[in-house]
Length: 189
Image (cartoon, rainbow, N blue to C red; front, side, top):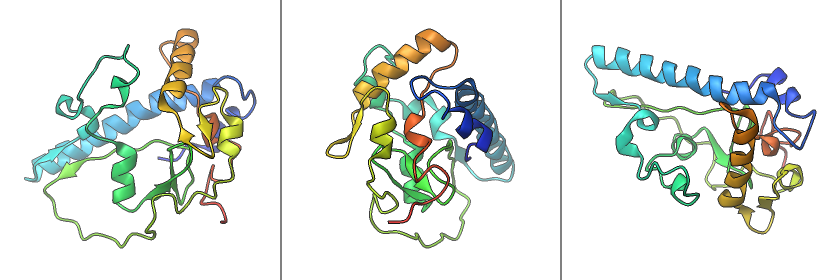
């Protein structure tokens, strides 16, 4: 689900801290996406197809210790990686997924026994849609992204923790997803 122009533009105003629009898009947007996934799951189960929403199923989380920065990245499921495998886009330096609609948005997924004819993936390489311009690294208020090393999840996570202290119950940043060539489209290579 790509973010609206209002959400993206709001997050460009102050490049040090996330905007209210971004925080609402991230948190309430994810709530909406979760409800949509659960509704689709219900419909598929009612039609006779076993279905699961991995991001909402406790079996898909290895460690729920939110105080351990390394453990935060040990889920057994990644919405972005599922979207990559399904042909929706490729990764950027910030580890976000760059789709036809850009990098700014949210993903949800379901696994079902319903057979659907697969589409052909429009790419072959994991970073094919990224121009490696480094604008996301320039935008990162935490300094968590570099052209040489990509994204350091621990540095990013520590900054996100600071936003949670300020904006609870919301948290996030998204500066690597706005004011970048891949914000709303696949950039020219």
